[in-house]
Length: 108
Image 1 (cartoon, rainbow, N blue to C red):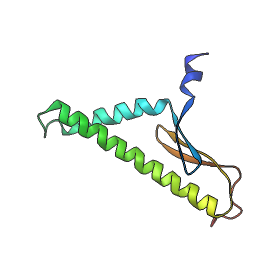
Image 2: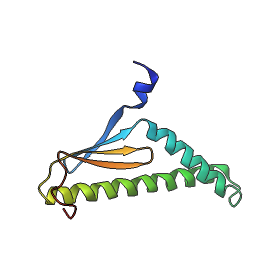
Image 3: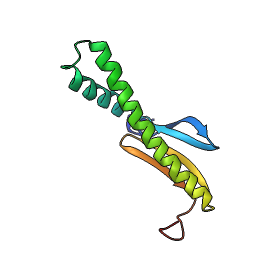
């Protein structure tokens, strides 16, 4: 297996209401990068390096949890409309609730 193929893979994080939640491996790189950028931006305000790193990590995790909640809301509405939800995937720059089929109307 080539390195590029490995980076396209995902792993199962959890099942939420019977919906598999997967994370792309590249997500960890973005998690580390965003945590470092956030931590370095507040490092001038907080002299403790560990505190700024923890703050950066927690801020980034809250950001990705909000994306997960957003995609879960899409999945709940899709189920209410009678569509089958295959999975929720968290990518490095967002998320996706994969459906078995597209809705009949944009309103759905």
